[in-house]
Length: 339
Image (cartoon, rainbow, N blue to C red; front, side, top):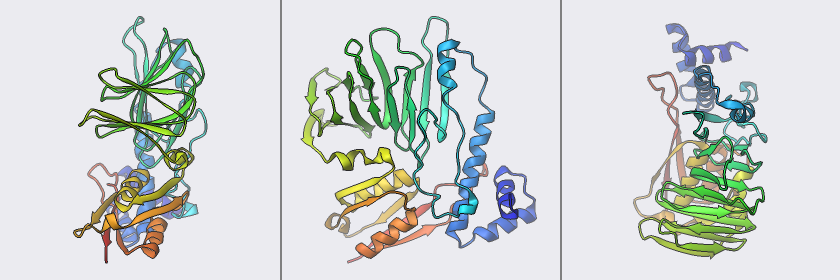
């Protein structure tokens, strides 16, 4: 570990002297790349602290086989590689959730099921295996709660956010994805995604068979290449064809826009890169422009540089502010659209 890395670590761990803190603050002043490096170190220190606080659990042999496959460690890009790849999306290896913010086990008694809760850290994608062998990919900020073992006739998980499911076929035991709005998506063996947020539920079918059940148990089936949507405000269900590549590329670490309005572009970039994007658009110009582009491992700075060349966009990246607990607040990007 070189001197700068050691300074950054001591600063984030709260062990730096006053002189060292002053030196670090001088390094990051006016340098977004140095500030980003410091933010990554702060995140790594926080994850390490959380790991050390995990209590010992004994939830039986079934849960131990699951918990042994799920690790809670945060992998941060090496500082020596610089910040050019630091904001890239990190796809996690199968069966290993290295970017998890939390893993919670709920063990009440011998006769009650044990549940596992997994959350994909902001700016990351988490991929893991369920007890039945089905594979789940969680998009940034999404949470999935599921039993440590699927007992009985139904396989059911609870989703908040966006997830992609590759469900192991079992005609006798349907697979349900439930949401906080009361909507459920049912499958037997198929590949599909569900996005539950802000009073809306969207399910996109890649292949197989999916059925949506709304809170009133109205049912609707969709075909591969279709999306079924539920709007809680209107209690309306709609079905339509979609571009599967655009809707599902996120699970492979890509961000795909196909004639998307600029406001949607900024919302998705904010989620994926864990930054606050503030759009200044008093004249409503964002509706006049749309984006047709694919991003993979570009940093947020590179993406906004591309947008600036393709559209009348001006932007400014602010250095992250330090919270009282030594962690760093999310970076902010102000965006202006000009005529």
